[in-house]
Length: 310
Image (cartoon, rainbow, N blue to C red; front, side):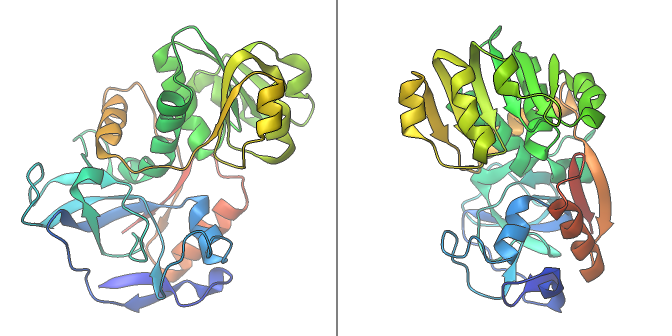
């Protein structure tokens, strides 16, 4: 099969189209013919070697951990899916990712792709969508009527998180640049704070929860805007236990755990029109296409997800 691999850590020039064996599948796995994948920051951070100690993988590495496609083979223990099913998934983090014509996925990571959701939309959803879902439901336990701040609302996670929070019935505040304010309000944000002209920590207080996707000073200043007993979770840094204690809040650091059941709930909201998948651009499956996709993601200026279509 064709796959885009890296044989060493480095720049976008390390992305090389090559021929590689179609992966074998275990008894609890299915083989998926990939129809689309999408780019996440973990892809290029891993490519550059920043995550080599945290996520040690053997070369050659096929990057990519979002997939939509069609099942072409099933393992002997697979019971809920069959050959021909259209699926989406965030597969396990291995060196055989989704920049390839075929990928192996464990059954418990799979969700059926509804007929009215495209392969491109399906590929854009798993990693960012599950991160938003687990932050909101598992870490923050957001309830109707609560006030929640999303740091970085125009990113892949933020876009889904705004919509899921509105579905729950929360009041949603987010930080973003002014050019994205109207877009985020259309998605359901009640208030958009322009981080270029306003300091959120000076205008907000008594928030029930903060979902941080930015890290750094933004994360550190987020503790003080929470009410006592409030909750914070971050995907972009380490928890500061001293600040959490000082402000009487609970803080966690979120690392996504792939989950087919949660992904099924999320894609069903997309199918019902309650959550929109926002796609920045669609690139072709080629060396140049993947390099372009990484370049856009690294710029931090994508509005929505960057999809690669097979």
